[in-house]
Length: 360
Length: 136
Image 1 (tube, rainbow over the protein chains, first blue to last red):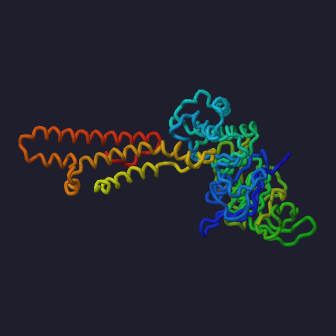
Image 2 (tube, chains in turn yellow, orange; image 1 turned 90 degrees about the vertical axis):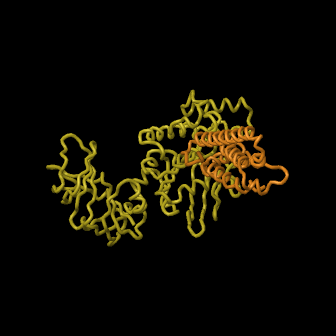
Image 3 (cartoon, each protein chain N blue to C red; image 1 turned 180 degrees about the vertical axis):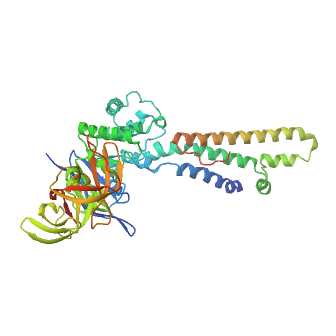
């Protein structure tokens, strides 16, 4: 059963003259892990705070669980938030922090105690009950913040860049833990992040935002494989762009003139955001190969290596194509027997028409 | 009294630093967790700025206790301690007692200021924020 837990329609938010959110239409399904992804200042945090009830809408409507949130303050909404700074109450112990929301509901003491113990178990903080909260590490504070929000069993858990303050290793560990936790409790998670890797690995669906607008809402695979425009394509992972001009369309095919690659016929489905206004072709670096010896590919083009970045398991090459000024990037897995080319070497770059995306 | 006028800036300086250092998201978190605004103030904000309030009270008291010039001009029939000491200086016979009284006044003042700063520092440590200046 897929039900919409959050419905946003025609949502606008102005700060004076500045429009932070414009015409946001978005449905979030019950029980999914949803991410709002975009560069800083794109309005993703504002949108999250609007759902939480910390920002009032300039216009538009917001429904949670079918109920309009118009005029409902944050403390009456079925949402809880994990703040970027965690906002752990510094004068309370771990257990007191987690019990805070339950006490506000005036539940019986025994029930509070049981729920707190369960929440502490859930986030793996056994034995930390009486620890003063200023004596916790970053990861532990994160867990307290999570437990404090989850113990209230909200309909939606809102997470505002919860992992940005952690170091890389801990962040990866918390990513999988968050995912596991979300599956276990079945609560809808809405995560705000600027880290595309984080969004891709954790989410069921992602909304990509730029300048207060949602550009695309899709699953991670579709977002990466079939971005709807150049902006999204460039933001999610690496993408090489070549200028292109649409010549004619016939049936399900479209004929394009592509910089360096010449005249091509592509299926219409590869114009992922529609054919209107398409002026470039995108290709992921891993879809290109540097051909060695007698290797062949569907298509190939001569190029010159201008830069080599060796990463151990991978090598990133910047190669210059004829008739294109900026180099494009090719990534190659360093399998056994593959030699790493040097700067200035000539390379045969293999590609295929099926890996090209026609974008606007 | 005139002392309110000279103590206010000190109190404002201490209290505003206590309030500014407070993370706004703490207030939001409490509200988000279902607490009312009124209870948020008593349960979260007040305990965290409490050290600042105590410190400012103590410093204001100390300043008022030691102040001489304004008290001298404004005092009516009930002189403050420093004004009283100054008045008694005319009588050489009372000098030893006045010396003792003056010493006590000095020690009490220093003691109160130390206690005030102790509270201020403790407040900062508790909220886990960097120490930015102070009086001592």
